Image (tube, rainbow, N blue to C red):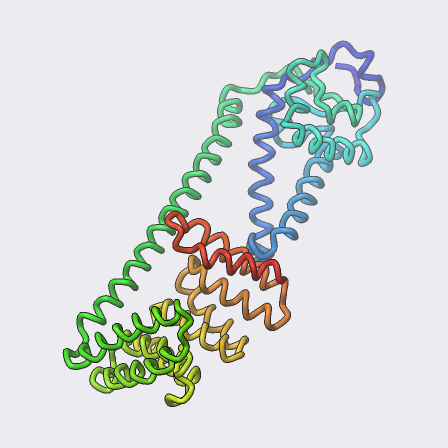
Length: 380
């Protein structure tokens, strides 16, 4: 072959334009190498994708750009993938490859890709096998010698990316599936534990507990009618029954939770402390069953109502260490961040809460919560 640096490619008929298949396999080989390099760099930098996605994208872009253009310039137009496929990139005028041409060709690839990959598919029909980014940069991809790639290279170039894609898909699918199963199992475990607490309740305490549940029903009915006077009459009796139940069975967290609920109603202010007493009751329930994120969320809710926003965030974060699927924890953190004027963080957590509530709202049980989140997001 004649020296490509001394003659214009337009006038050199000895070069054969590289086929679409060869170029595709070469790109797959380079993608595998780049993927390993970028993964190693990201691991070394200690970034987590969700938290530092913008920085990781920029690092990946720079590494990929330097990798490709560097090989085009320093290795006679051959990246590792092109080398094993016996092809290379050359300038149409026969001059030595330079950074300016490299930049145009590299970023031109985004044009070819973003147009539904039509810029790449153009190689198949173009007489000179040029992609759109080749035309933009004034380059060709040609066979570098008379050697043909082995069938093994062809096979690996096509097969390995498929295996990687399939593996990534399966890992993602089973991770999500297992995560969902884990969350459902965890939720069922909490629910079963709460029901077990009721079943295991001291018989005498259970009598007072059952009376309290009837009072709760009456309070809700009065609330629907906006009958504040009736609520104020019932709440002290409700608190009295539950306090008696806690004295009879002080280690049952479900009784303490119900007592905490009782202190959230109007009329509880004069009954040993109102919301502060409710907070202490919820904390007692959490102390007795620290793995129940339901109880933890109740503590977070009460801290928020008391204006202790930083403590509220810390409490909800306990829940998120147990499960990432608590929309109430994300919503609670969002509300607290809003009150702390941390609107960006508030919005991020509100969006996560909305995502979780929407996904779990097949029966409409989270309609009110979704509305609350949307109202919060409008205010941010």
